[in-house]
Image (cartoon, rainbow, N blue to C red; front, side, top):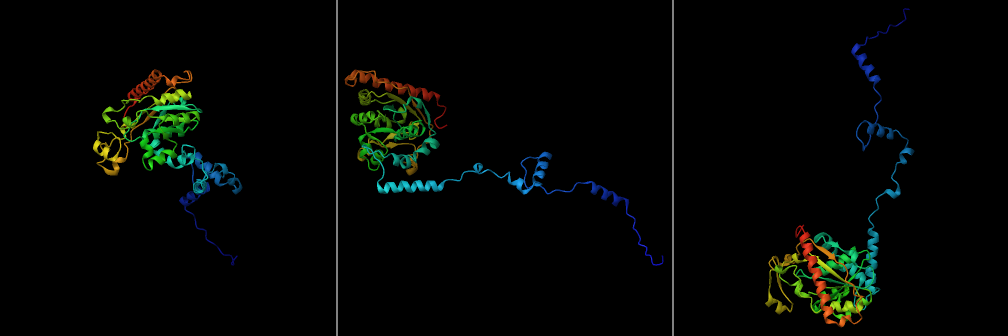
Length: 350
C-alpha cells in the first residue's frame, strides 16, 4: 500500500449544500414569449406552450388569405382615370339634347360639392321617400343664400342619397346661361332654361326637375328678411306640372340663409356690372378672397309630401284661378315647413 495515493476530500459548507438543493428543485427556465395578448399566469403558460410546438403546428396559425387587409386599389383608380381621359379626348361619351354630360358631372363637376355637403354644411336630408324612384316629378324649393349654392346641395342630396340616385335637372334664369364658364357648367350638369317648353319636355321624359320660383328675389334678399318667401311669380311651374300630370313636391331648405349674410346691396355697382344685386356681407369684400368662403352653417333639406296633379282635367293648366290656388298652396306648404324646421334647429352652426 506504499504506492497508494491519498486524495484529500474537502468538506463542504452546510450553507453551500442548501443552495445547491434549492437550485435543483427549481424548474428549468424557458425562453420568454415574444408577445402576449393576455396578461397573467394563464396567458404566460399558453404562450410558453405555443413556443414549444413544432414549426408545422405554428404554421397552422398563420392568417388566412381572405383575412388579410385589402390593399388600396390605386392601380384600378389610375386605370379608370386614364380610361376617362381617353374617352374625353376621343369624344366617346354621351351628351343629351340639353347638353347634359352625365359622366363629366358625376366625376368632375360634383367632386368639389360632396365635401361641402357632408363636411362643411353637414346637410341632413329628410323625406327622400317622397321622391319617386322613376317617372317625372317637379321639386319646388325656396331660394336663398346670396349665392345659389342651395340648388347644388339639393342636387347632391338626390344623386348621392336617394335609393335610385336621381339626377336633378334644374331650371335656371337667363343670366345663368349668359355668364361665361357658369353657363357652360350649368349645361353640362343638366340644367336648362326656366321656361315652360323645356320643363315639359324634361317631365315628359320622366326626369326629376327642380325649380326655385323666387329666383333672384329670394337669393338676393337682405339677411333681415331671411326665411320669408318672396313672390312665386305667375305659377308657370304649376302649369307645366298640370300639362304633364307630374306630381309637385315642396322642398324646404334651412341653413342656406346664413352662409353669406347680406347686410347691404351696392345697387350702383350692380347696375354697372349688369347683375341683379351686389352683396355686402360681414366678410365680403372686406376680407378679399377669404370673404368668398361660405360660413359653415348646419343645413336641413326636407322634401314634403307630393301634390298629385293627375286627377285634374286635361285643360286645368288653362284655368288661371286653379293655377294660382295651387301655386299658393305650394308656397304656403314650404313656408310652414321652414317655420317648423327653424323651431327644431338648436343652433345655426351646430
